[in-house]
Length: 189
Image (cartoon, rainbow, N blue to C red; front, top):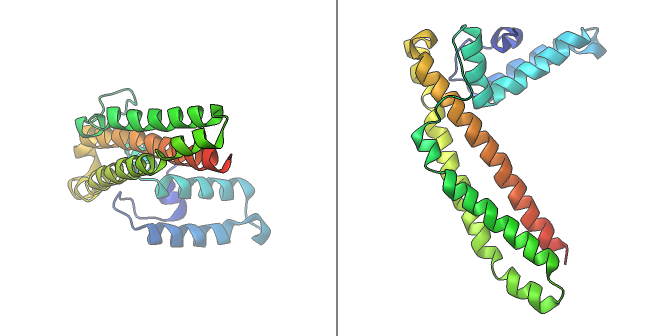
């Protein structure tokens, strides 16, 4: 198993600044870049390590694996995350419904009537994205405590946070996609 912390020389902790990760990633990438005589495989591993460490969900997962702790992706999802499930699903369904209805509208008037729903849809998307970002921030803020107490002492909590962040990351991607669908539907005329 690859240790992304060691690979780019990042301190072995979860509470890392993005700028610190990016600086060390850039240094390691420049040193090991194939155009500078570096090894292609090592360079690709360094790039992957940067991707892992720049994602809080992947970073905590990597910490769990590097520490040799157990992790089950199918374990219990934090209640704070699951509380948002129905709202996320509802907003995604509303956007899909709008896109479908608009693609079937034949007249400009029909499209205009449907387009009146767009501000509400955008507001719903912004609200759910904001709520999920707040939850993500709260989960990531626990990293400092995990580092202080020691990863092996926080196995259950770290696994719960990792599963929660996996869901939040997945939902964020779905919401970005929904926002793109909404925009494309409007451009489609």
